[in-house]
Length: 447
Ligand SMILES: NC(=O)c1ccc[n+]([C@@H]2O[C@H](COP(=O)([O-])OP(=O)(O)OC[C@H]3O[C@@H](n4cnc5c(N)ncnc54)[C@H](O)[C@@H]3O)[C@@H](O)[C@H]2O)c1
Image (cartoon, rainbow, N blue to C red; front, side, top):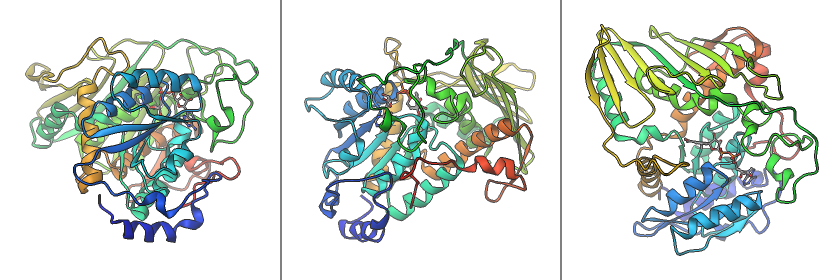
């Protein structure tokens, strides 16, 4: 652990005025933070949001030899049941179940919170966790809006905690190798990156106002987001397509590939971002684009694009997802797996590095379990000895911000000029309105 208990308690008492973000943390005491992880001790995690991705993460954390899943938290009691069942096969310990993850944060038996709840929860929950003395594994995107990402960076530093973002490809060996080859000049100077995602998602219809299901705590599902009436086409998963909770395909799948491009091209903040597209395929409640192209220009004579097609699954380069770098002497392709291919300027393959890791095709929710375990272990190294995280919050925020700027451009219908020293939008009041959000009363993110 980076902090001694004394240092930590000092920090927490300095920040104690803001410990009640989002309501009460009953019984919150300094003793809760007494635990320091010894090098041989298991890391104890609590998982927030265990319907789909969270369940897969719970199983993967539980199968790590140096970890125990001690709590699972969800506002859907059915999801908790499903996750309990899946965990039975992985660990002897039966986790304690919570509807309200804030109760789990009070426990001194928890070292880290794993957050796989919907996007509107990511940054507020991460902040509460750090204020409670926990490290955080935070699913992508790290935030719902740019301001939240900046708060997380400050909070990680203020509370001395680590945040690993769930862009797991940053820890996959052949992806690391491919990016290193790129940086070593295998295709000369790389100056353009193209990325994409395609799927055949169906319509979500027009939601009906119905009674809140008995299995769901709708108030706590909404948490920091201002209250709305419950409808039958939001929970689960479809919230992705509503700006109030979700961030669209751009941050759902774009974050992964744009992050690879930013990493490979070695850029941080752009000078200009523009987006075109819309909800073209169906007429329903879906608000975010189902068809979108975002362009990013950087001062370093580098550009990149992301193309998202939620409702036309035609592949590009034989893959539904990818990141392709173009350079002076050739191209380098990543297709979302643990592999890469290098082409010469004519487009002939000159090198192919294939996956040498075990991928279990029968595992539908988590086929890349073995690879993702490397990301989890890198997180543990960061917690235990301050090792550099492969997807720490500063880098995670920069990649998430790029796609958020794309969505802001999409929503106001024009290009954005960006200050490339800060990533902030220049001279555009309409665009700046989307820099942060309004919170439900009592849920403002306060450092
Ligand atoms: N890294 C990856 O490859 C990857 C893959 C899939 C999803 N994800 C991310 O994981 C997150 C979850 O995605 P999903 O597909 O599992 O969504 P989902 O809607 O299926 O599940 C979200 C779960 O969170 C629960 N939840 C909501 N509010 C909660 C609260 N206050 N406390 C506890 N639980 C709460 C919901 O009840 C639900 O069970 C998303 O942000 C998504 O972007 C990442």
